[in-house]
Image (cartoon, rainbow over all chains, first blue to last red; front, top):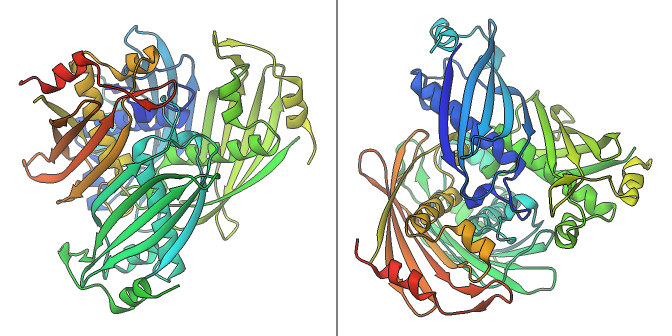
Amino acid sequence: MLTHTYQTILRLHHTDAAGVLFFAHQFTLIHEAYESMMEAIGFPLRRLLAEKTFTLPIIQAEAHYTHPLFLGDRVTILLTVDQVTSSAFRLHYHLRNQDHLLTGEAKTVHTAIDPANRQKIPLPPELKACLQAST
Amino acid sequence: MLTHTYQTILRLHHTDAAGVLFFAHQFTLIHEAYESMMEAIGFPLRRLLAEKTFTLPIIQAEAHYTHPLFLGDRVTILLTVDQVTSSAFRLHYHLRNQDHLLTGEAKTVHTAIDPANRQKIPLPPELKACLQAST
Amino acid sequence: MLTHTYQTILRLHHTDAAGVLFFAHQFTLIHEAYESMMEAIGFPLRRLLAEKTFTLPIIQAEAHYTHPLFLGDRVTILLTVDQVTSSAFRLHYHLRNQDHLLTGEAKTVHTAIDPANRQKIPLPPELKACLQAST
Amino acid sequence: MLTHTYQTILRLHHTDAAGVLFFAHQFTLIHEAYESMMEAIGFPLRRLLAEKTFTLPIIQAEAHYTHPLFLGDRVTILLTVDQVTSSAFRLHYHLRNQDHLLTGEAKTVHTAIDPANRQKIPLPPELKACLQAST
């Protein structure tokens, strides 16, 4: 299965008055990792939205928070493809700070739909092959 | 000229690690006031985006910050139409907290464009009339 | 167990280029419902952050997305206390649009910690009693 | 005067249902450039917030939008120090896409304050020297 690494920095707008990452922004960060992965395998979201043959909305998302992230932290997100079915796939993300400490985990489940009617459709075979490829 | 009042509450996601409103979110808050005004006068943004006869992108925005906003503050935004020209209008916003203290101001300039080619077009007369109406 | 209802409107900044709610913002919306509930029972987050005797960081979050939310949609969030243990509680959220259609669900797990050392502590009894009260 | 270059990519969460950058997020992007600059000159915001000897809140911000930014666009932000006074400085940002087209501009004015009482104080001389340095 595919893996992909994404690096970013925790910015002020990711924090809140409690002084650490606002929990919802961990989902924003992992989605950046997902967008980066989709570009890397030749399926940039911009093209998907323009071509309108399929889109991949998230139907489930979950996260665990194990250590706070602070302003300025260097965050490395390891994305791994967890499961691929006929019309959906699940991604698993591990977030680590500059000390290689696990700060959180997340999962997202994406289903292929026809954007015209929002009905579930099979995953395009080329995308499926990319997600299942070993790296 | 039209005026419109909008009320909201400062939420955790509006704050940052400095403990107060993150400056960019003042723009998000005033845009909510703008959306609320456009609904009130019969031009909800959703319909504008769906009908595609014109949209009103912001070409200029500015803000002043005079007093910090804290988590839980009750914010009242007074929107006033500042200027209306053939193809554009300027809105002025005053933000006050629950103690009626001015916490910030902002302005946005919106130009009517044809979303198909992003060229400037005249403001629809019905919209122009609404913006210029006394309230 | 406690229930709490929160109402909001889907604004442009909640949407993305796919034309619907960006998935991470469902977490932002349910956190507003949580903040509103905490205020209603007399534990506004602002006071918790100021007093520093305990905070309630989210250690787990999950969401399901069953129907898209569009710009301008009226969203009603029903929050129910799902589970209360000695030092944690779980909240369950149901989101419905103006047609009473379920658009999504979410859960958050909050643990009481001492903000000074981030160690787990028992839930304050008064808070526990409020969460367990029938409404 | 100091200049600093920052590069980023326009992500889905920066866009809205109109299909392009949501205007308030241009302020979020330029603030990332500002944070990156402050780190580069040895004044990371995290340390400023921790040490509490001074902070640099934004008291004015403005932006112009000259060309839309789309999902996936490579954005280069050139930050230049525009003006430095005894207790404040103004930064000017130019945003360009991968085709070197100017998509927007922005300015922010920052004032040094004592976070304990939020009173204006002189800019620390070391910071002032860094901002005024030629690069």
